[in-house]
Image 1: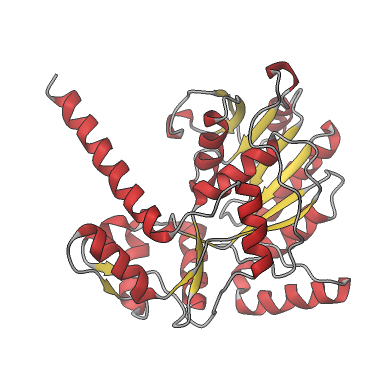
Image 2: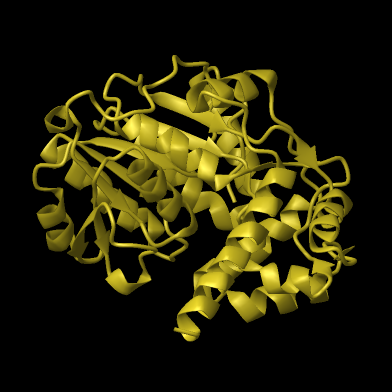
Length: 332
């Protein structure tokens, strides 16, 4: 649920392939590998032929064990993180939706600093052309999204850390729709969008960008806004799903009861409360990408970012393929 950084500086394109010789590729640790973003980072690394180490509480929640070295542990157990960090050159981290997310990220930063590892972080971050502008931006967004004040503090912690950090700041995740896919198939699109549009980004694109940076130590430190090619209204999103499914899908993002019912069925705890608070805020928050952000995203990807229509078609195609595989196994 991150918002784009309005002052992202355009950077050179990092390599999108592992180092020429496998032995010289950096050793990578991915945290949060079972989440929406972590799975895409691992997938992008796997497509490049790069292995990654993961620290997870439950290996069964990983999409696949292919291309990963599993370490079982928890960020609340710093000793397990230190063990996983042995020999690691670069760490990918996204702050979890947890009440102690600030402390968890502080643990990650400390471990990276102790081991001399670079930190590539994805999340909410507000910057400015001067220190005063940055402070004002954090105050402004903190007022708009009070539950995200901890996340803004995290972005500042990462930025000021001795980890040569890269901060990826994605716009609104298209993959939020996957969490609520059964609601959409039931005929309602409940994700709020401003009447003049909300920029939405495919997390697979974010994963590709992150993988390229993780594999390229020469990528300059800094903040990179990662965005989709266009902003969409709620009815536009509902229309894309309606055409792809071949049946009506109604925009219900202005209906609090529908939103609360949908989130209550799929999310719990701090994650549920974060989503509910931020999604309500999005109704009054117009989000468009700047030309600089679009250019940076395309340069880091090496192609145009994925359009929402492409994303929806891919989700349904992958769902159909998965269903066909399950059916085939059941008949053998």
